Length: 345
Image 1 (cartoon, one colour):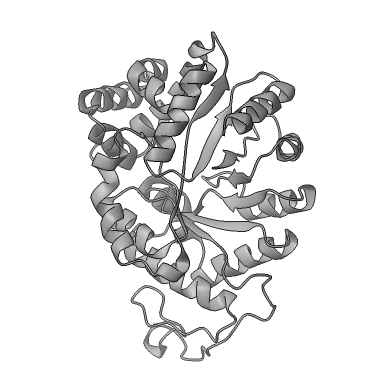
Image 2 (image 1 turned 180 degrees about the horizontal axis):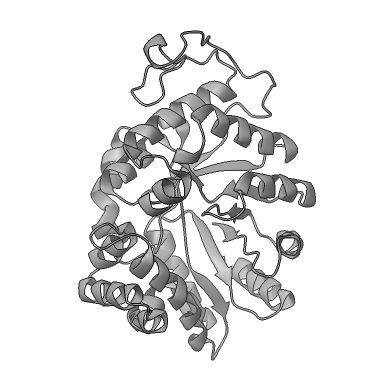
């Protein structure tokens, strides 16, 4: 199993990049660069390409509504060229609050858009003359929707690779099914190895049944907080604020994908309580309401034997690559945690 982590630049981006370089030396395989509504991910990925030598540089994730499909392809190809073939294009929808509130574009037809984006990106990377007849991204743009002067084009430069991995952060059944059929990888959130099959199993099966065998198996990126050693169980609480934020505060009542997933795991009452507390302004109460059993069953924090059992559960559930964060107050501590995890794997 590969090991990946999300870039965290709370203490400064350059310091975070230096940390990734040290983690790379210790065996880190992938760094994921988020793009919520702060700095853009692509410029940071380019910086990481110059600062690292081996680690994969993945967008985790680019919202599909903020760029045209061709620009997504160009951006991924650019990072791939700077990194000598280490880019991963991670895509997701974000949510209506950000897309319509911050970007001012309609949040619509996510499954259709992702399918068309995948098709167009792969045409761009192959240096095909790009034409497309989809309802969302017709290329060239028809005269009825523009000037009528558009012409079919192909990318001017030559991409390092003609098939850059595409990973989709999908949650809803139709989107997960499409991901399993078309994408190279799947990036679920709050993945629960014991309950994931009940939540996403039918969608994954349906998608894999119509998957092109030449694309190879679907990679599944999932994991949680990692801390290996005796007496570390209290560190599991570090996962509470992020869970509370997403389950409680991302989206509105009745329109929160993360809350729906949490409820589908059997935590329906807890999901409602976390949302009630968070939306009322009690963020600490919302974090405290995250069930201890969820933390125990999804984090990789505890004695070596405990973590080894959890790793086996993740692997058996279909996870092929870990996406984790590391317990430790200092960089040296986090490097040591990564080395311990690598040794267990």
